[in-house]
Length: 305
Image (cartoon, rainbow, N blue to C red; front, side, top):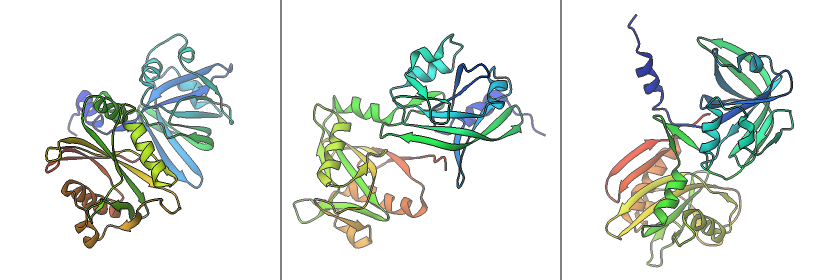
């Protein structure tokens, strides 16, 4: 068997972009405990199961493997300090975060993207780790963007978009999807376009919120789908992929991205983006585009499902 360099293997694992969570529970004496983890994924919808991996060497090993349950707190982009605190040997980690006891009994945090309060379903020994499988008993979620992690560094696309909006001529568009259709509006010149708006001093998040409100739809602000510099129009462009609920839009209509529809998209860069979306939506695998209006790279988005 070929000898594997542990450091090199860890670096290879680190190329897998993940979210950042804090796993919490109570020890036998009722004291809260927690640790930062990115080895989290959903497992099953029926029953609703999630898992996280815990090192056998962890000081929390006994408490967590014997606990009745645990909670997963998916950190938001502004909670990097919480991630760092729970990744280090700090005396009172819980002093740095607003938390409460969840419906099933484990600590859940305020300000997170989501939390899942779980009963312990099963523990599975796996090499130098143990897999904790929890059954979701209660959960809550918010539109707050989640904190990402890859190659040893945090990933904060929404915060980066906000920073960009302070010093660039920036356009935000909303790629509002429902099923296999996308909301398209009249571009004023006989063609079709995505709803878009120039970003003001309030930033990209506020601009996206205005677009969704103007659509008249109930839609969740989604992840950044495309970021490009449009030299022809002399601006930066960020497009957010959003999922819409049922309802009739106040402007435009939902349209399947057929070849004839795509020909009516006047902006070549947006047309290329929507061609990619049409292809990716059929496969269910999405990526984020970085580049200019003619060329760039697509980074795959990892799903925990």
